[in-house]
Length: 66
Image 1: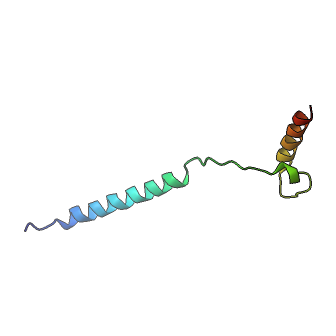
Image 2 (image 1 turned 60 degrees about the horizontal axis):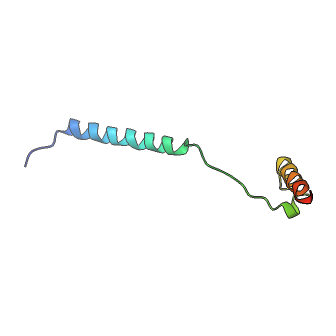
């Protein structure tokens, strides 16, 4: 059996660690596809729904009335 050069083994470990760190950073900073669905029937009374969503609900309601 051939002896493994300790220097080569250490370099392989360093390369593996760097790749793991880079992969983790890439995963953390990927753009997230995020969307939310709000129930327009409670939009006016719920304090948890943002103003932009309330305005969108009002606009949808006005379109339905027409």
